[in-house]
Image 1 (cartoon, rainbow, N blue to C red):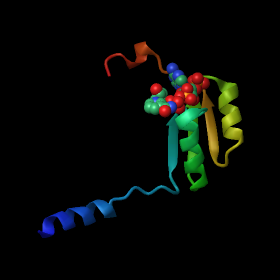
Image 2 (cartoon, helix red, strand yellow; image 1 turned 90 degrees about the vertical axis):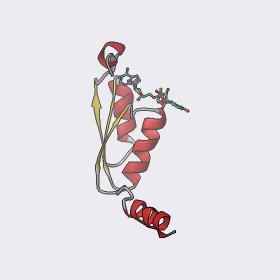
Image 3 (cartoon, rainbow, N blue to C red; image 1 turned 180 degrees about the horizontal axis):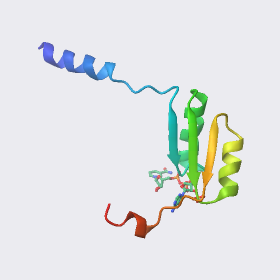
Length: 83
Ligand SMILES: NC(=O)c1ccc[n+]([C@@H]2O[C@H](COP(=O)([O-])OP(=O)(O)OC[C@H]3O[C@@H](n4cnc5c(N)ncnc54)[C@H](OP(=O)(O)O)[C@@H]3O)[C@@H](O)[C@H]2O)c1
């Protein structure tokens, strides 16, 4: 009967550290990626966002603290083949 409680405690201690990290978010100029970048930057992380459209990416990074934009990174079907 003690085993489930022990497992719970072990998992609880392994919680992810969500501050002070360097975080790379692909597709960070809009949608889910941008919202995730906002949350992590507010929590004191250094965030790097990527996307294809440089203007949109720079605009997204400019409105956030500790966010760096790296444009021109593209994923295509050819690149993803074999995954
Ligand atoms: N929104 C939802 O409720 C939802 C639910 C479940 C799953 N999803 C999935 O989650 C992903 C993101 O959704 P979202 O609504 O946040 O989409 P979104 O607003 O269109 O954002 C997509 C992001 O990915 C980048 N991107 C698009 N195509 C790319 C490519 N070929 N290579 C590199 N970057 C690319 C875009 O920037 P650039 O165009 O400048 O490259 C943008 O930053 C999608 O795959 C979507 O199907 C979304």
